[in-house]
Image (cartoon, rainbow over all chains, first blue to last red; front, side, top):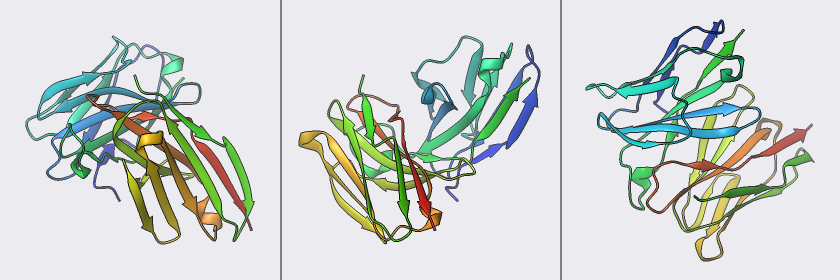
Length: 117
Length: 109
């Protein structure tokens, strides 16, 4: 158990719908990352928050958005869902976010498996 | 940005065999991690190893940062070692981990 929790574990929805994925980081970690794992694209970085502020953005679609709340949990919102959005979505956390230190090690949650029908 | 390549893509071994998985990265790194993705999809941290050598039971890893590669060694393989092994690197000044395509390891009894 990494200490990172994600809900729900599984989500089945229809095209055009909107869903919210939730992540709670490890106790004390300020940085939260979202990654998407799909069969054709592999594991890809979406977005990162550090202590409530957006810190880095990857290839995140405009239909997707995220935020980190004062209690440090994060939510990833996916809207106007398409079949191609079906994937495993991971949240990861780390204490820090820069430099070379084991405090930058990222720990991953169990993931949310999203199926869009 | 940094690129990460893993080899081999697939590896099939008998229980008890040893294996070496390789990860090449294209630039200097501040973070290099190895993960095992089990059949349930969970990513398990194996090593944080931007340089040097570490050991944890039957697993060990070595990163030669100057030559931009890392190796994961698995000794006396067990069927529970099956799964996909990912290497991921974070370049200097970057925030994200960039993942390789993984090595799918199958250990047969």
